[in-house]
Image 1 (cartoon, rainbow, N blue to C red):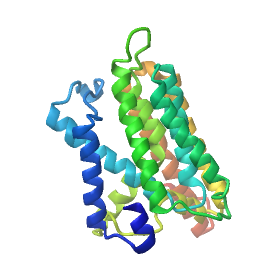
Image 2 (image 1 turned 180 degrees about the vertical axis):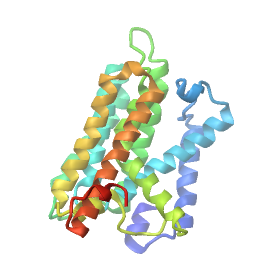
Image 3 (image 1 turned 90 degrees about the vertical axis):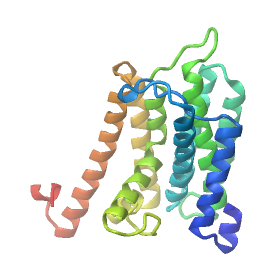
Image 4 (image 1 turned 180 degrees about the horizontal axis):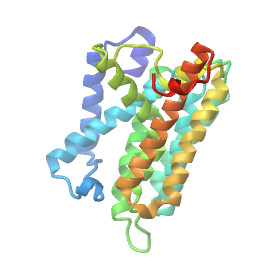
Length: 272
């Protein structure tokens, strides 16, 4: 589907139908799904139907999130390398070397591509690349959470797995949810293309593609470090912290954009 979209285009309804079918195959037939919430908001084991629906929606969200951040040179590639490198290390820690091999194979492939995708890019991944990367990353995320609950004999449980997964994927997921919310609030389709993505907003501040990519990669890595350092405070508190960091970062970009437009660093620019 990604290849067809790159060559001749695919309408959004067909794209989402095929994404749903792929996600349903993985979740229902492959049993790759989220069946435990680790006590987040007091929720533990999920009923089968809820687990299936929630997992399908999560896969579709992550797939489209990687597709949507592929708007500047190197960003989707760098984000995917950070995500899959982290998953690979975690799978080794949990003794699941086959999944680690898949994660690191993705890292190697993307690193080879990134050499030619750094600004000014010579080649682009298109939907063919971003949808595949999003799908593999979604599977890695669900498998990591599932395995962390019951890692097996002689391997440790990672009780902060949901929060750690959120931190690993916070960049593309936060941006996608943010732009969808703004579009719906403005009465437009959430799938209408615009230049309101966080990477476009940072470019408007005067940074180039490489600087923007490195800044967003830094926020991504910072989020992962926060979860690793404070894993004892619980998943709910950690997820709220990670989302708060992202909201604060976005707020500061808004402040800087207003200040640049008004040519003034006034306090009121924080709010209006």
